[in-house]
Length: 51
Image (cartoon, rainbow, N blue to C red; front, side, top):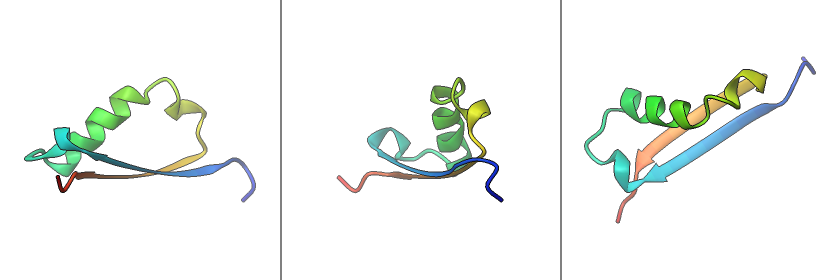
């Protein structure tokens, strides 16, 4: 333990409606691609907005 910070990211978006969880995560990972290598740990949660 203590090697680095752990992050939990929750993304809620209309763009996720009708999109599989895998594809949702791929979209977010693409946006964060320059940051992810510097993170010790990342938990990603995505879902379509209710509106």
